[in-house]
Image 1 (cartoon, rainbow, N blue to C red):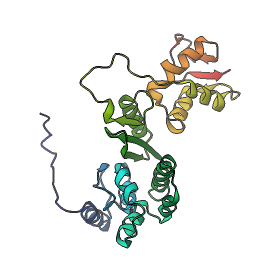
Image 2 (tube, one colour):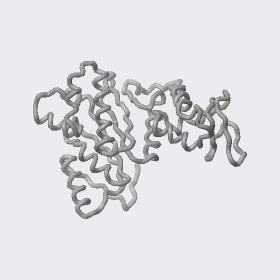
Image 3 (cartoon, rainbow, N blue to C red):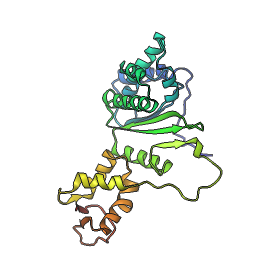
Image 4 (cartoon, one colour):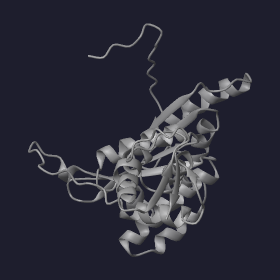
Length: 269
């Protein structure tokens, strides 16, 4: 059993999330104060009670980020419902009425992609989140049940979340399936194919001269789907150097081949 420090207090409030969180933010902001650094895990039941404007208020405070359960199965099921009250919930959920264009999309995968992309775009545009990552949760019937949307303005937060996602899905870093959960051990865990990462690095840095390893790492973190902690050095740069595709130097002249410490510079050939 995990015990909490004596200075930690846990409060339980019964009622609607939006109502309670709005009161909390109103009280804080009316006093000219800011919300303490917060990791807000917002886990709604269905599509009601999760206005994007409220998410934007939370993450609008410094050092605040969110992890939102986007209940895709329920949202998709009722998205064409003619009831005006339900439609109003969708307007609040997406922060726009643009979701109505999704109704006409008949291809299931295209519809899912558009819905997920729209919510991501709204988190970036209306909530001002610089980094948004998604993780798909698939049920035992092999259907998408919901997506986890992680939003942050912190590079460190993004790095830790991408690492966690890749630990859960070693092959792609973006899907977890209940069908794969079993008491039977797996002999060979899937591993990510880093060939696309190699191509992305060459496309971005080839012809740019010597590039600091820190810049390369930031590119992997912020632009690619890969984790700079898991995939960059050992799985990508090491084999590229052994194949003669990199020129590597370090100012201290003490670098061992196959290592990429801070202040290393790389030329992609």
